[in-house]
Length: 335
Image (cartoon, rainbow, N blue to C red; front, top):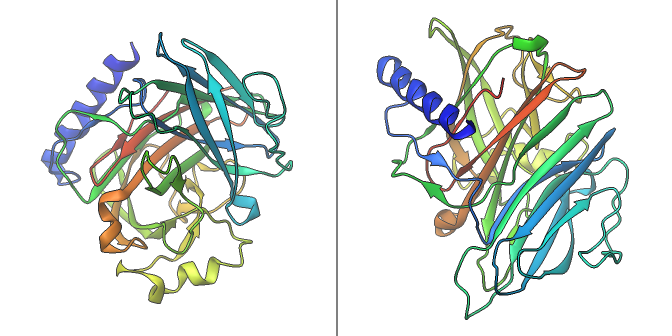
């Protein structure tokens, strides 16, 4: 049922793009439910609990994984540990009390206000070039709603063409008033290193020009926003906003790890908005990439995964994930 829904909504967005110019090239369907060697997600312990489930789908061989955790509230500093999965093995990490697959302490203890990026990477194995990991995340908010979605892999189905535009749709069905928009850009350092690079905040970020379209396809201009592993208390915030640190393109008006959509569907934790002053409760957000902190020599290694969550602040919440590697992506309204 989920895959059917996604295909239908991809078609509707492509059709709308052909009519209005929102998007002019073929969309690739992101792959987040097939095995991969690298899985990316987010976690949040701010009045929330987060659980990350990992499965080794290899029925014959054990796999060693490298788990990296980047805490935005601690200047995106990295914590990491290694873990081992036997064939067809599944384990769930409680980010409040992280134990390894054999039940021992992982050595990583996160503070109550921690939130950010989690990466699970299969370590190098010259004799095994298959993709063997699948995973999902569950975030439970103290207000009664929760987010569930697959961890995002880095394989994409279809033959999508590169475009500068990225879109997701939203509405206020089921009393939705809050949102969590998260885009995670990172450098994939490769299977030989068995790690990713998120913590280099001044080098790993993207700048987007944001517009919102209502249901009649009328555009409303917003502002340029930066997605990076950073919050408003970071000592690096001024450097991120300094256009001199851009490698290419134009700078942003604000930088953050997470955003709300607008005044009608604001951020769940009171954070920055993609489009302050805008009150449209149903429409499409268009993100046009206009700048980057990644040097040209790293462009082919720049990977990005993204999550859109909507909730009513009470008992209803839902989230979807997408993947982008120098390609287009779209989100699909989970309600």
